[in-house]
Image 1: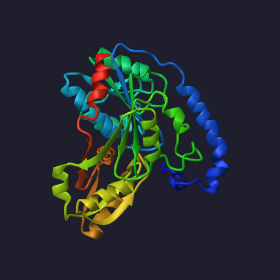
Image 2: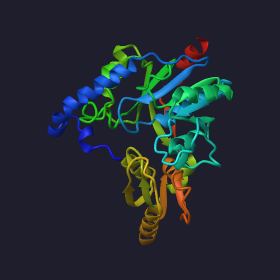
Image 3: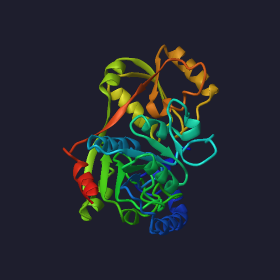
Image 4: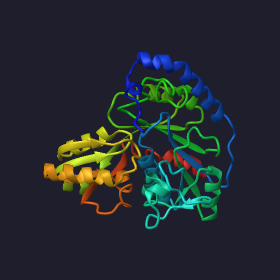
Length: 332
């Protein structure tokens, strides 16, 4: 599913204004849900979430936080609902095994997370948390779930894409917000803005008014991928929240993007897609390249052509950006 373009206009369109009463009702329901008390656990829970529907950089942020926890000698486990899974095995929580599971079974993001720390997938967040604790987790890192009240969160970090911000500032279906911005800030402990865009201004100002830390960050392509793809002629494709951001990154690192093919977020690739991509690459005389998140959704398919991937990591602009937050959490 691709978010409507009118969501991301700086000012509400006529359609957005017409849908605004529905958005107000949706936002009120979400606000009430967020106010419910969550289950407290024997280990700390860190939530990495966002204010809007769609991608903002939660998964790279969650990986960066888990890496720092690991460096401190903690045993972080990721919790995920496995969004995008279409053939989940029956039963309770699933511990993701990249060698065994496909994106159709557990979702694409959990497969990426499981490369960095043990990952549990379940619709029931409390059951997933208890499974992780039983398996040895000392800290739980939720990828998404800012608006979900099932678990008590000891540290909540909201992530904003600075190119898109909060869109037109209205709630679903009139805009991308899951609830009014001020209501979502209740319980947030820090804000991460990703990128150099100017549209994170409102949430950043709101965070500073509440004396919350604002951490500026960027998604950096890894050095090997940068060197490999510079001056390479490519047909790029991506089914993520904002495919054009991936295409722009490729151009900025020097790749010759002969064709850019966007797909909906979490697109379940099939054999027809592969045939089309093979044809596009052959006609352009170019290499296929995609994101890591897309590639894990391709691995179950047969007769895949050579496909390169570009990995990115979250780099913060403030030294020791997450350290004070983790210090306070672990001391408590």
